[in-house]
Image 1: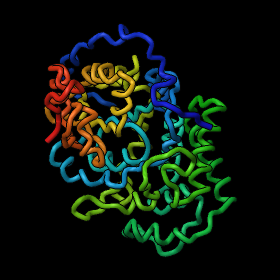
Image 2: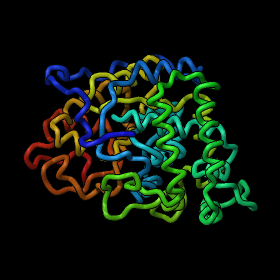
Image 3: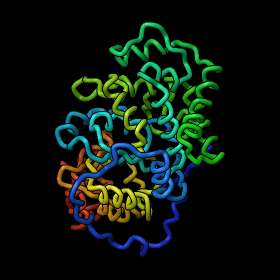
Image 4: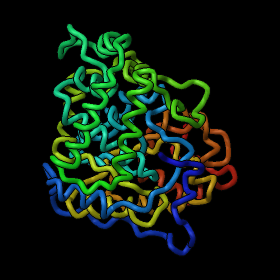
Length: 375
């Protein structure tokens, strides 16, 4: 089971001196040598070496409670470059951004080891599932209904599964398959606690099915909480479905990354001493660029606890350029006070270098100074 109260409670942030202003990211390497595939040993070494101590949050956060996260996808594709390194935090909303941006490599950094266990569950399911219908079948332990094909819409897929009974036998069979993929196929050195954490996560999807919501397993996540099905059939602002399960093409982006061990989950506090910096060093050494970094609303907690400066110092060590963007939740666009102390319309897509320059100028979270990345 996971325990959570405050985001940074278990992060061990004890000394301001630990986070003395970080230098800017070093000059880019001469060429892009990001791997086209990681061996199992290389993947697990990155997970282990880059991770910090387990932290806590107020919820299990098994799925997003942000029903509008697809809205920014047209702008994201106009603004950010595809085929770079993607970073993010939290659960499945990352998959939709990843499917759109088609990165070379992905790092998901989250303070909870529970999120790493969630990501490993997904990794196994992607590898076990040949197509979207198989994936939905395995995720929710429901037998695949007849009539679903590669060209079925995501709305049709979830409608077909909606009234299919959950299968206890299928749940047990799939859980064993997940464990075999991770421990026998990949030989990841998972502890008994990790295996129990994966079972806890998978049981939640089996128990609640496509109706699972952010607070199904406890905590509070806002008045409106979309179900998993709601999130998958959602659209962007123009009405186009762009979720990671919207087509076989988007699904295959994730399945390919997972099968090549190129989606790497890391346990790390955004303001911590190692995780983000380790990712930055690795990407720099391989001549890559972080093209997009999905933040969710972690910055709110960093500001509340006085650790935002440490996070921005960490981000300065990432290889970025003028096209690199932060992705913030669309629903936060009216919460400028978190960043500048006054009213403002926070841009869901924010150029990272522009924002860091404003931070360095002392214009973030100080009185009512200019609000970086606001309009």
